Length: 99
Image (cartoon, rainbow, N blue to C red; front, side, top):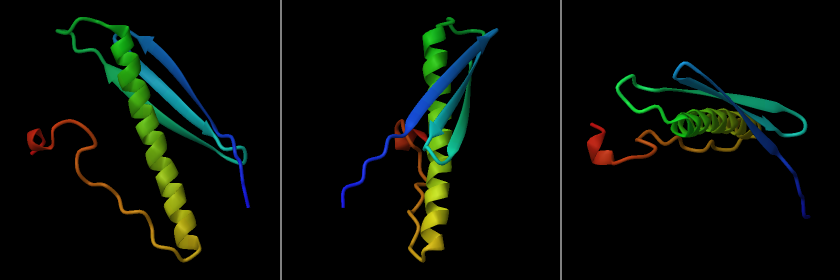
């Protein structure tokens, strides 16, 4: 049986005085999940708004993904299945630098 769904993710960004906030919303048709992320420009750094946008949006989408995984785990537990193991190490960067 073939099944096709269309889910939409929208990301809204706002920037005010060196702080960028992102809101990522996943519309699954029957439900919506919202993730949030923030990025702040260090006063000693050059202000590049695109970098703040990228950081805030990525953090909002990471929050959204975590929430979606929790929903999937709850649904799997409800039908008696094992849940997906959670990754506990760093998600990016050099692992040896994170100690």
